[in-house]
Length: 566
Image (cartoon, rainbow, N blue to C red; front, top):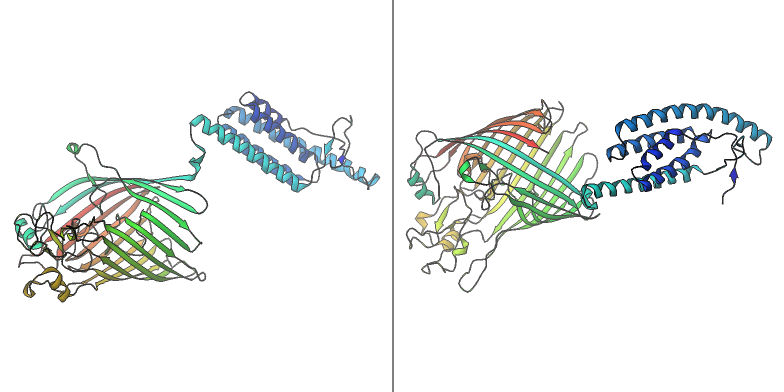
């Protein structure tokens, strides 16, 4: 046991005593803990040389009282009374501290070897000397114990498990007015269907709709090295690139499906691996990938930072597109995407930046293969059809037209997309940014000789090599508009040839899905308040190379969105 030293006077803070007595009625174990805290820290008040400890104690006491109010142990009125009393006690303690300091100095002069702190007048109360480091440890231990008790009590009262703190919720809601307009001179619906081998419902009649999108997700901290996530969203279960629902009473209930299910680990601060169904891992635009598209598979990302100005990134992954159950009748193989990207980024002192990325997206077994003369429900290559295609890509009937009314279409071309993406973000006028983004894609998989051998299409009917796509976009304003009065305006031009990218995955708003299209985008966003903004966009798109001598299909779209997030 450490040597005890005596004080000439002692002062007990009545505020802490009152706090203990108030809490006794609510929880005996908690009150005992707080009383112990009061006695331990009162020694700090009696020491004249430790005013810093008094300030720490005062802050800790106020925080503790506020916490007890939040947990329902004390009423707000009682807490205010205790804090006022504590303030008065602090003033008295300061006066006593000065007197005690003088007495201690006199005692030290009389007996330096003993280093007496003081002796109480009635010689009844003695206070043990405790080093500052021990006092700090005691305070932290007591705070942790109090917090553990309060958390347990809160969980017991609310019925919440202790792992609730490892969950982080997020979500967003969007209300949309959508007007789809078809200019005069568009081709007849049936003629367009026959020429493009697509299922399309309209080419001439304007349409107005009210739509909604809702998403709710949770990020999960599994342990120190593993995280996970789940997210639910509206939208049709067989639509990979849209989460919209059209408002109409006859539709009954909206569908709610999982579009995120993943686990992610950070092996090092620069290296991470994710698996399951997760968000787009690429530096890209909607020229190749729709913003709502999820990726099913595994991806590894490496993002080294060389200094304050230069950093790099590299990502590789394998993603399942369509799992096919092969058999003695079904000779089709699983459809996969194998992809890799590398890039570099430079950032200036004022946060302006230049970013460049080069990607290769290799689609495996996505192209169609002719059944030859072996047609029917068990034909060997029925599984090579493209069930989720939209419009624009060159296609052919796997059965060669031998089953009228039962055509089964597959992609003519293979797809090996080389994608170069660049972005210049000028932050000189911050918070206003000027951002220029460019994107170029070329499909290296288009080979006329290979196509003829695989599809059986005769030379005169082979499609032209239309395999390039590009987009240029300019944004001016705040990078996001999630605060009041934030604003942004933008314009873009797109040119997507028929077989440049897979029409299943490109933007679903421009041209109402698909390729073989060019046109303009104009828009703007304005912040209405915290996490709330209004966005307006106008898309004007026209077919590049009409098939069978038809007039080009034009589609104009107006979108007005009210967005919220939480």
